[in-house]
Length: 151
Image (cartoon, rainbow, N blue to C red):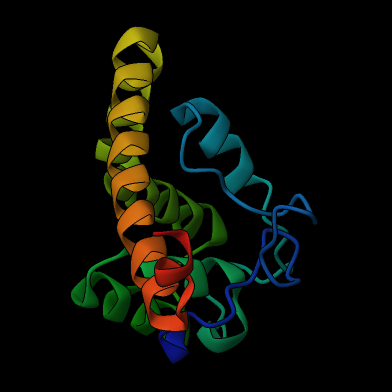
C-alpha cells in the first residue's frame, strides 16, 4: 500500500526520485556521503529572510517524510514567514535522514562485516521458503487433480 503523501517523492534534481536517474539518497552510505548529496540539492536564489513555498521545495518535501510532525510544521512556518535559509534547511534534512537511517545502516554494516552470519541467515530463509513452496505446490497439484495422477 502506498500512502498518497509519499506516492511521488522528488529526487535531488526535482524529478521523481529514482535509482535509475541517480537522484536518490541511499540508505546504506556513510554520513559524509549522505551529507554531500543533501548539500547538492539545487535551490533558487532566495535569501533566508524571503518567503518560500514549501509545497514546491524539494528540501521541505523530503524533510516532511523524515521529520516529526512538529519539526515539519516548524520548517513550513519558517519557509512561509521567511527566516530560514536553504543551508539551514539542508542541515535539518541531513539530521533527519541520519536519525532515520542510523539503525538500518548499523544493522546493514553489521551483517556485511560478518559474511558467515549473513550466509547462514540467507540459507535459513531459503530453507523456510522451500518448505512453504513445497506445501503450496502440493496444494495446487491436489486442487487441479495432478496429485492423483502421480500416486
